[in-house]
Length: 212
View 1 (cartoon, helix red, strand yellow):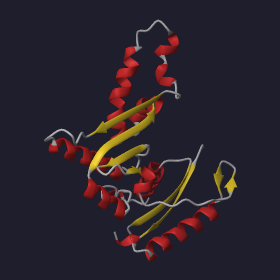
View 2 (tube, helix red, strand yellow):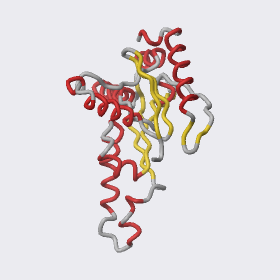
View 3 (tube, helix red, strand yellow):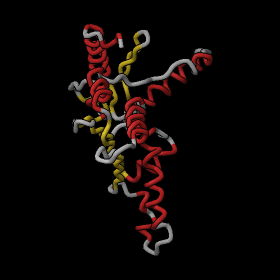
View 4 (cartoon, helix red, strand yellow):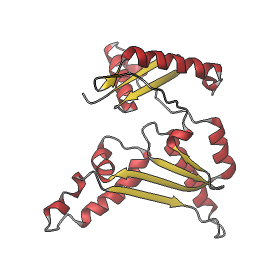
């Protein structure tokens, strides 16, 4: 009731336009549609995976990963974890739970209910110190962590610092585009969203992005 998501499927490609809803809503809709059509066998044969910009991927491959920063509200890192077990949430949840446990037996009721406070945030930074000799395995694992964040369609709110100190956010790494749409109540007009999605699909095709 608080949001929706528009999407178009063309062959093996899907373009999405979120309006207050996560991409998992589209995936859930497709799952239910396949079941309704009696095509349950197809449920294990598809997934929605974000596509990263080729130049950004090459940059990470060339320079490596120096630091990964993760941000989330305390509420998001705990309560939402049960529904969104993404790479970021897996990393942040343990730290958030430990923080909450510190106040579990506190006499102050407000501190006992700290998990309900959305104005508290959790920030985790994992970095590689190149000044120290060795540790190539650690650098490799940090690179794999960055790759998992990029590949997870639900993960946002992360920043990757390359070995050359270049800063990349989730929006900058994944193929995306921003458009202005006329508002319609709590959402936007369906016709406007569909037109924007079709135009974007054409742009991706003409630029060769669909060949990745």
